[in-house]
Amino acid sequence: MASMFSKPKPFTFPLTFLWILLLLLSMINYLYFTIYYTLQNEFRNMTNNLKIIRNPEWFEVIAREIKNETIKIGLVNMDEIPDEIRTETKMVNIHFDHVDEHIRWSDLFPERIDEIIPSKCPNIAMPRFEDYQELDVVIASVSHYECGVGGLRNIFRLQINLVVANLLVRSGRKDNAPLFVVFLGSCGPMWEIFRCDDLLWNEGDIWVYKPELKMIKQKVLMPVGTCQFVPPFSQLAILTSFLMDEQIQTADTMDHLPQPKEAYVTILHSSEDYICGAMALAQSIIQSNSTKDLVLLVDDHISLQSQNHLRASGWKIKQIQRIWSPFSTNGSYNEWNYSKLRIWQLKQYDKVMFIDSDLIVKRSLDRFFVYPQLTAAGNYQKHFFNSGLMLVEPSKCTFDTLMKTRFVVESYNGGDQGFLNEMFSWWHRLPAKANYLKVFVDVNDRLHQIPDDVYAIHYTGVKPWKCRKEYDCNWDGDEFGRYASNSAHKRWWQVYNAMPKNLRDYCAINMD
Image 1: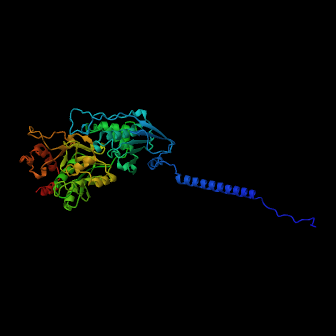
Image 2: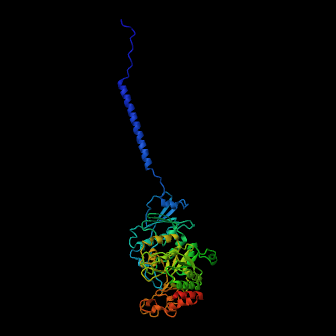
Image 3: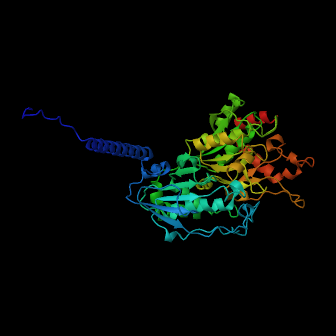
């Protein structure tokens, strides 16, 4: 008989339930890792794509110096800037009429202009400056395409640079806060207007300037080209004073202003052929009652004995190394004329007037120092100036730039004059009597008289110290006849006769 208490059956987990549980765990695991890796990838992508949003580097240069909460920017020849600016700004487009496409560089820079009847320049349109006030920054763009015709001598490029300069003077902040200029595009700024000394930052086709406003004010007072002479001296002084201080300064006030350091400069190198000329030049400047320094640059071809006599004639002597003219021919008269570039190294002076040593001064040239770089008289040849008398502003960066480009920029005459005319295509015209070239091209003029009111006489042809006192030897033969002038010859010898006897005696030795 079977026991009434049978052995219990073991518990068995339902197979179906087990499969369901495993399936749920698998799904949970799948969802967990899917979400985890998805979020991880998203985070990685966000990290990889994350950029620190900041101003472009060129604008940071400006923003560091401007303390305004909002920076006001004028845009010239552009609708918007290519880079996003994060700083609070207010931008305004500057409107002006583009210069007439029929105007040529030769219209602004003619070969010569009338010395008696006032001339006029073509109109270069400017904005209505009263519509744009309290600007902190002016940004301008001139593309290579826009200045392609004429290159550096492009009228539209000049207009853009003049618009920017005038905006700084007429529409910039009036609280003596710094103003800034940015040029965008391959054409770049005109260094005749925006000095390399004021360049804060440059990378590629972007230039950032912090201009010295008083220098810009001088530039905008000048005519747009050499189609007009520089303004009358008194008028320029008044206008400059007005723009600098917004009122005409009294004589008492002017007495307390720091006086600029200025000098006349000439150079002797490679030979002693011009010793007498340099002595006479110094004496003529002194005789004109000048208040400026006289500086003579000499290389090692000028003997110590000659230097002592040159010093006695009035010059302060400064030793230099001469500079070869890369586009001259061996043995030519201008083989070392690039030595003249050394004048830009005279940084102890605010302005210098270079004068070739074959000139003499008849009337004081001191008043001409009011004009900015580069001011000179015409050369009666295309749009060129004569580099025998010119007003420049010494600067290390200008000298460095001239030295770097002298092998690239070709000189039309192989010497300094051709090179400097390419480097300073925007210049300011003095009347011919400031640097009266002793050359006569009128075949009907047989007297070759020099006017009485000239400031300086430039002795082209055979030099007066190479001729007899009584006679201009340029009259001998046809080759130099156009350089002959008895009246000019007489004036040089008048300066010579007024020199101290010891200087005349030493000069006489060098005449032989």
